[in-house]
Image (cartoon, rainbow, N blue to C red):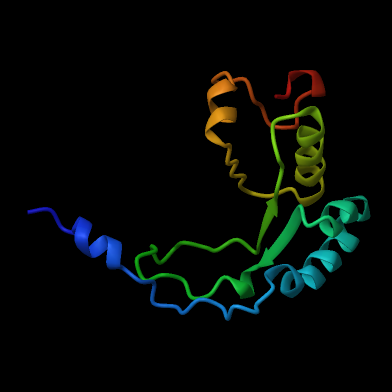
Length: 135
């Protein structure tokens, strides 16, 4: 018999942490941290912060490390979230600007299904290459 939740128990699973109160405004709560980081690293990114497209989540806001993580796992100092609306030259330029300023150890890209289906496999490269070879 397979271990883990069954479909009936998975649907009723509730995380151990309560959600924030209904009046909680995450953008306001994180805006000061993000503004300060951007001012120190690259003030040219301030427009993305003010528009709500760029948010910094410092490690102190992550919460407890889950028990299932390996003991040598290290949480990143920061998680940067950049919202883009679609694949476009403007979105690619914004992503490149943030990557060059922040220099993250890891990058995660989420595409909607239609964007993912239209992108050719292997067609995207890191922004260390000349702009002509980007998505």
